[in-house]
Length: 194
Image 1 (tube, one colour):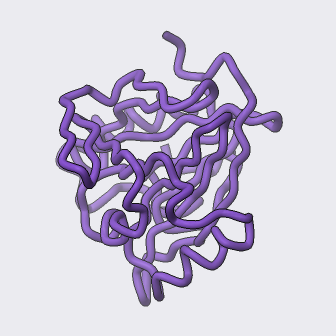
Image 2 (tube, rainbow, N blue to C red):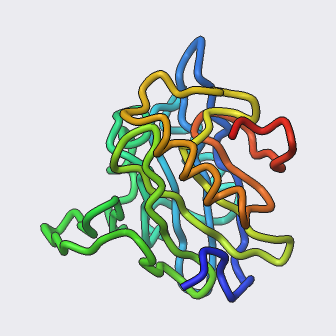
């Protein structure tokens, strides 16, 4: 399997553009592709309304969300998962839901929709995953390999900096737009931390 999706039918929106401080908030994204309605990283936010109101403005409610992806298990990216009680939750090693389902399934290559799949991208933590989204405008990657378009050059939490840099190289090989963990989307450039 190649990292870039073969299909480019997904629609992508930012529900909340995050920040690394003061006041930490995770960037929370929405992807729609066919019957799939996917929320990515519903973590720390100024309020739950900061996630739900933009969702409502797009004509969707919490029960419409079919899937939630968490890039890693830090609380600033997971805190609001329960806002979506009908959703399957995807992480690096399983799919689970609020009815008690737990299926051990590795994230690498897991397809959520025709134009959406997951890849393992360890770096910030050993369990990091990225969501790869094929849109009409190009390939979008939601990832915590970067916090924003300029930082960090070296992630102070990375267990192994060499692994972080290898995962960044993997993503930069095909991404047209990167959605970082705590900032606005950016187009990779020569100044993007490698």
